[in-house]
Length: 534
Image (cartoon, rainbow, N blue to C red):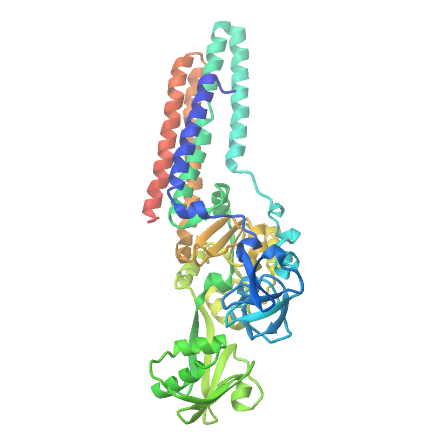
């Protein structure tokens, strides 16, 4: 339906817009390095050390076979399921299960791929190939594949289709009228209609606005897969958070003390004893009570899974579970370390997740406009804190397996909710893919992130409400530009159907109107971003 003049202009303008947007996006190096289609191979190292004849042989992952013995170094990932044959394993499974604390494994126990060893070297006897590991099977489950998420067509496509039908109807009616009344005006009138009613302004306004919004968000370290994600964010009605690594940070533990007040010297004693243990909680406590004073520890003894004891400058100190410290029936107070001095119970240190500084303010801004949920693979130790933070209307679910999170998202969607899921680990992969908008949180830009619709740097979470608001503004700007384009088309068609608008004048007016629409959309989106301080 587009004449040569209109079509040629449309093609050239599309090319100009494409190269302008591409140039701006390529200015951001981080954006170029991002991938929204990650799989488990992005998470694993390229090679691992295999022990053969007491020598370390670097071996590519596909070449690892059952029966091989792997040497896993401190802070290294376990690439295949196996049996621990040497060393003491403190394995961080937070990326896979959501559990915030490392899991203790003894010789003879099974360890799964995807965990990270956090204390010393260990040796593992491989029982399954990398491609057959629990992690790989989890990632490759059919319900975790992107194809399962149904995408809705943009409202722009629907409006453009109806616009085409209307223009064709007007052109046909005009042709019939002038064929009957004045055949000489038929072709000038029909040609002017097709030129003046060219959908260039409609299509370019949406493309140009979306492109500018993508550039602005990328500049603020919030990267979207495509323009469709902007519309889906604006439609969201329910926001679902993962807890560990999303609302909380894995870089810190919040430690509080309850009980008889400890003097500075006693705190130094506790720190000295805790520093002799390799357990993650002991290390965290020693760091929390960090002291430069050297204190002698003798008779140190550690009972795996229970606690530690020793003489600290002649005083007997015990740190560990309630039953270890007191000899009585155990008490469950979440993640805690009890302390006794000379067999007298003093109190306990309570470990809780350290919430990101931006989380309280972010939740307060969101809970007035959205339904909120938290899905966590961790235990319920933080339930009361989270309920206070998110409010009584929020849904909190713990001990959630990856498939549980996926099913919950489906349940919300069946109720008509448009779901935005925010997570960071493999245990969130299915939910991120199923949700209408899946946002992966990256603690560092070079961290692994599961496949998602968007990637946000953790430190930018505080600005999430502004990003969502900008997506709403984007939709309003596009609709406003559509209205302006339609008004322009109505005025132009009014003169075109009467045969009083020549094709030459129409060819001049059409690109002028398109250019004005583009300037309005670009200017409006940039202005709103500046007002939001983005």
